[in-house]
Amino acid sequence: MIPVTRLNHLPLVLNADLIEWIEVTPDTVISLTTGQKLVVLESAEEVVRRVLEFRRAVYSGIPQCPRLPAEQREPQPAGASTTPTGLHGRDRDDS
Image 1: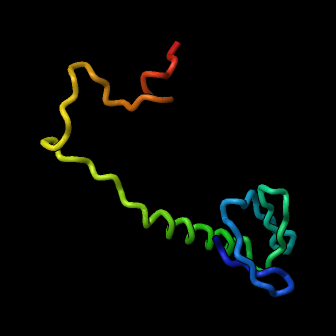
Image 2: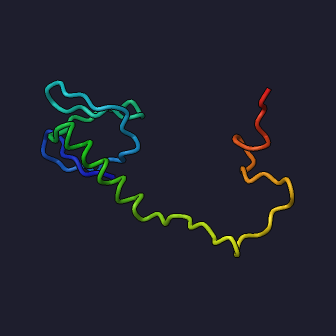
Image 3: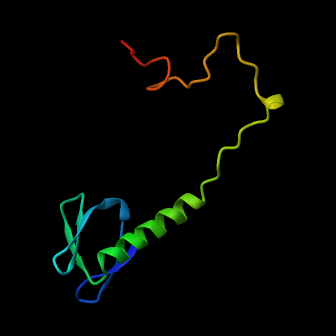
């Protein structure tokens, strides 16, 4: 969520995930994935800066998955793939 200001100076908190694109016409117009358009006082550069700041704050709180030392890992059966199954693993159709 990022704070922006409408042209009538009313503050608004916007879900940054809904931003589809930002236009400068010369006002800053934010087009949302919902089809709604918002005209705001902030420049396009400022909106982008706030989105990046928000994303950094969100992702900085995600702990990295540590790799276990070799002595703590479960032994793999002979010939077992270390690639996870799913779209990139054994279920993939390579034909």
